[in-house]
Length: 312
Picture 1 (tube, rainbow, N blue to C red):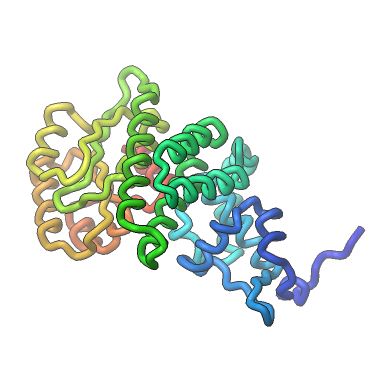
Picture 2: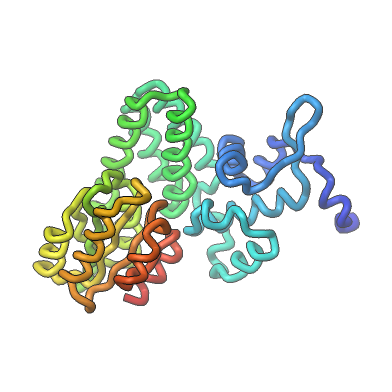
């Protein structure tokens, strides 16, 4: 029996990115994205610039893979230390510690194919990748390990000039159509509670709302999906007409819109105190003061959304 690694061994940067990818099941593309965008780990570099990871890095990445595969957003947990991540993983149900079908390695392969299709402006090829993903991956893995990294990487490549706006628009259109179709096929139990999902006025990005609708449907809710850029008055009327118990909003950009603050206050006034409000998206924290004022709950990932749905 080999001895357990010493503290010094754990801190020795000896693993290549290929080894880390093979042992964690995370694609090299996703590993580099997590490093660049979130500083999940900061690997050492050889004299020739090649990445080298420690045992501690490897353990942290494996924990991040497990947690993101089961609903946590990488942006919310990347900065946490290994001990905290171990505690979070220990709280997962026993069945959640078993790798979902397809797993992250397959998701990584599909991500590479999706990015290649996007770069080639090949809409049909991207559609085929998403169709294969639906067969090979569980829905939580599909959202967290394929769709979210795909859209994030497309955004990064657009910012640095490797992709054009046309690439982003094509991919966004394909993913939105895919999610709409996926959600439409989800069985809704008789008597299921209703949640209204939308983006408010000024919020033009709806993919986060579509993914949230997917989570709600899987949790046994009926979803009234109202799309993007919806005025508070129209949203509130739909909530009243259909008797929605909860309103779920996605906020992405801009981060400091005074008109949106007014819209959120108006929405609370119009729907009344009995209807729950929950808000997610990367811009949500920028509106914390008004969200606290109107009693809206912040949704940071699939797991917290699931908790909001269970308690509503």
